[in-house]
Image 1 (tube, rainbow, N blue to C red):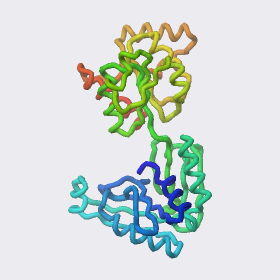
Image 2 (cartoon, rainbow, N blue to C red; image 1 turned 135 degrees about the horizontal axis):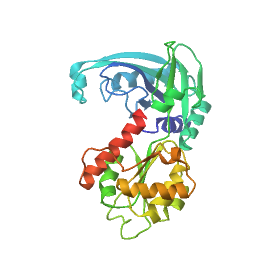
Image 3 (cartoon, rainbow, N blue to C red; image 1 turned 120 degrees about the horizontal axis):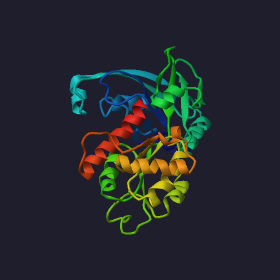
Image 4 (tube, rainbow, N blue to C red; image 1 turned 90 degrees about the vertical axis):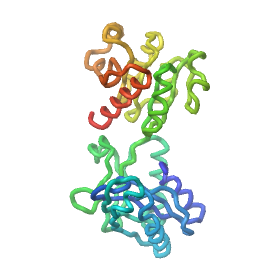
Amino acid sequence: MDDIPALALDWHRSGRGAAIATVVETWGSAPRPVGSQLVVDGEGAMEGSVSGGCVEGAVIVEAIDSLSDGKPRLLTFGVSDDEAFAVGLACGGTIRVLVEPVGTVLPEALLAELAEARAARRAVAYVADLEGPDRRLAGRGDYPDRFRMDRSGTEEDGRTFVAIHNPPLRMVIVGAVHIAQALVPMAKIAGYDVTVIDPRPAFGSAARLPDVPILEDWPDEALAQHGLDARTCVVTLTHDPKLDDPAIRAALGSEVFYLGCLGSTRTHARRVARLEGAGFDASTIQRIHAPVGLDIGARSPAEIAVSVLAQITQTLRKG
């Protein structure tokens, strides 16, 4: 569901045929946001969702027809209150869905380029003329606000649709401590690809943190191996400068959108002094969120994890 372009390309190249349906506009309480996608093959097999189940049947029929005649479809559906309630919404709304058969409307080479960019974690926008044949890819510089807000949508001209394909969000947690045990499942539910770094075998074990990659290298080496970019956040939780500081220095030298560090105000003051001694200026050090998490009066590891994820979300969406 998260990689519809690659799946559509595979289906097309295998001879199954593929049409991609994309939500291009919504009104009211639509079940799925703009940019949501569904891929359909020539036999009606599907992956993904454009409405949570409300109108998928009609979209599949239109997608099969589009594969037959090679033409796009721009469909408008009203989702009733009863249908919306069935998928967990209080009221209904209206959605517009663009259906594009691969190979005719959506060129195979363009789809391959999009899939390649996504696989390489390179931010890219797919731009489609809703009233004409033009299809192209664009970079972050063409739609900086849309990339920053991770917001697909139609431009003011009413016919240019821009689908933002940002790399998946990632979270790196340094320190496999009790807070990490609570934060990992919360972050995964929120859509993050989570990695834990801890070179201490007693902490970084699969028994303590199941179903999550655990890197046992020293934090700066592990972060260099993992890679850091503008869609990654880093949280340090060891409370040990020997482990936290190398990770903090690596994160400050990157484009990570969030860096949060466990520790009291006094602990952070000592941390700031060490960073200043290492040559970091005040504006760079101010990127650190410390003490980590929103001030909600959290006490237990789970409550602290809630405060951390809330602060990360606030930084991502309102920063």
